[in-house]
Length: 437
Image (cartoon, rainbow, N blue to C red; front, side, top):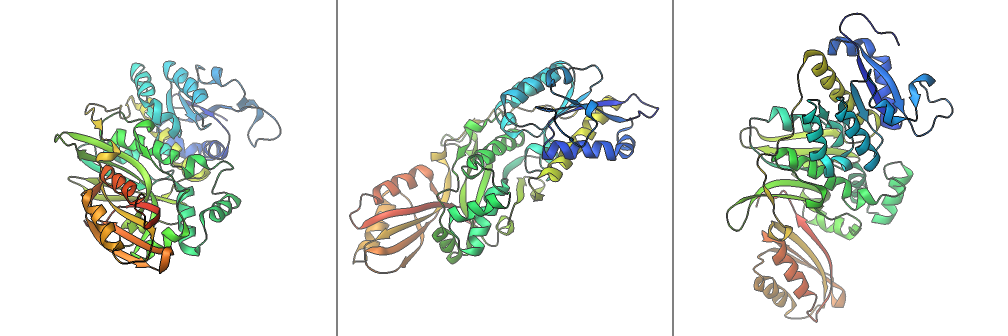
C-alpha cells in the first residue's frame, strides 16, 4: 500500500482477524483515500496479529504476524486496534501499546468492565487515547454521546437491551410460544448464540456493558462485580403468556441509575435481569437481535439509541469511528475524553432498590387462600396492585403484581409464601420496569 504525500502517515496495527477484524482490515484497505481525507493524513495498515498463519486470509501475507507483542510496540505503529477478545492476553497487549505511546481502540467489554481504570491510567500517563465505542451495543453510538454530547448535562438513568442473543431468544419465545430450550437451540442454529451461550443467557455480557455505561454516566468506577445479575434461563413460555395478559413483554434489561440511600446519600444502582416491560414502552418493540439504550438526562430529557448491537460489520463501524477520531487527534494534536471518576459514588445493594414485581404461584383452590396470600404480602410491607387467579383445584395459578417494593421486602415475602401449606410452589418472580408508577 503506497503512502500519499502530505502529513506523516498514521500507522495502524490490528489484533485479530475474525469477523470484526476482517471487516476493519477491509475498510482500511478499500477506503484508504476517503479515510485520508477525513483524517488529514494517510491511514496505513502496518500489520495484523493472528494466532497462526495458514492458507489464504484475504490479505497480503507480509501483513500477517504471530508476534503481537512486537507489533504493538513497533515504531511505525501509532494506533492499535484490539478485536481478539478474552482478558489477560489483550490486557497485556493493550498495556504494552499504551505504555509505548500508542493510542488504542478496543471492542473488549469484558476487559473494560474490570480494567478500565488501569488502562485509562496508562493512557493518561502517555497522553494517548483509549477509545471503546464498539464495546457496548455494536454500531449504536452510546459511549460518545455520554462522554461528549451529554458532558454538560446530568445523566440520571441509562437503561436498555444490550445483548442481541437474549433479545432474539425472548422475542422468539414471545412470538412462537416455544419454550426456552427449543428457542436457544434455534438461536444456535441461526448463529445468534455461541456454542457455549453462558455469557449471554446468564447476563454476564450485559453486566459488563452495564458496568461500562454506569462508569461513564455517573463519573464513578464501576466493575462487572458491582452489577447485580440474573439471566434468562429460567424464563418460561408461561411467563411470556402471563406478560401478554398484563399488556407486557419480557426483556433482559441493563439498568444503571442514580438512587438515594436510606441516609439520603446519592448512590448508583447497576443491575441486569429479565423484566416485564409494558407494551407502550419504547423498549418493548425492540425485537430480534437488535439493541436499544434509553438515556434520561436532566436537561436533554429522554434519548433513545437503537440499532444492530453485534456482528462483524456493525461492530467494525464503531471501531472505525473510534479509529478515525484517534487518527485525527494524532494529526492535529488533540486528545479524546479522559476517564472521569470524580463523583466516586457508592454502589447501592440490590436489596434497597424499589421496583414492581410479578409473582406467579401455584395454590390450592379453596376458601381463604387469597386473603391469606394478601396478608402475607401486607405483613412484609409489599402493597398489591392486581391479582388474577387461573384454573381450579391444587393446580390453580395465582398471579400477583405489586406496587413499588424493595428487593429485600419482596424476597422475604416470597420466602414466607413458600412456607404456606396451600402454596404448592412460587413458580416465577419477575420485576416490572417502565411502568408509569
